[in-house]
Image (spheres, rainbow, N blue to C red):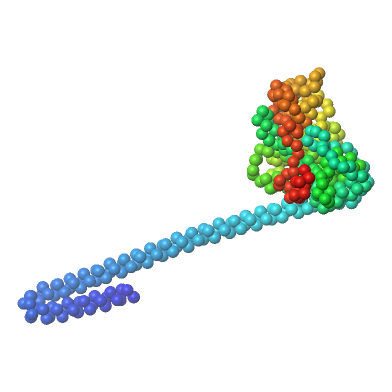
Length: 393
């Protein structure tokens, strides 16, 4: 269309030039050929100007088109990123859904134990927690206590408490041990020396230990990538590993959630660990191959075999500071060095006096736990915790 317009304008200018060539010689006395050449030159210049203007307009249009293409490409990139983000979120949602299904299956098993194990005797699995005698309140009669424990499990009133394991001499929290506390309907806290004996005799000790593990996993998920070197020690009772219903689900869940291996340390008493059947130890070894590690606490006999412990994937040994420092026993420094040769860390527990800290430093023992560094406190991330529990603590 622009080309036709330019041709018409050129012809109009040429016609004017020819008319001028006819009229001007008579008026001005100029030669006809000169006027004709001038008219033709003017027509050519006009045509060139028109073409230049058209080219300029075309260039502007191309520039606008290029800009539009660039904007469209940018929008497409944004849409691709949004689509990828949606796909990733969908994948994460599917993963979280699978995790929730697994966790709900575990929780369903735990709740089933409340009903099926009434009156079933349980093995001893004392978890006093904290290194000092727990505070007590007015005694609760066993029948009432039994009902309180069962209702607390069913109504989500088992809270997670954490006690730090500190690095000496800085006393910086390096790890945490997990403990459970039971709340009654009024929000009052029952401490382990109140509920553990009955929980053991009624067969609920395994359920409490397993719920503690469940709470700890919830905390680890909420923590995410914060403080990546911090580990959480979670007690596992002998009843749990010998439970034909729970233990296979536990193994499947842990193998399916390998990211927990960087955070979780499963803790056994020395007596229980020695009594675990070889078949069960082999299954625990399969967990160790996924990166999970174990700890031994409640040590009665400090005459340990570090190589054997390392072979069973034990990474931490916790020993009561009084037993560790007693005269005539295994020299603490020698024990620490022997364990360290096999990548097993020694932790002194129930530390309650500054003098004990000095003795530990003299023996180059760098990990300690006890009321001197902090008693077990309610986890701020525990979703089951209430203001009443915080007040009661």
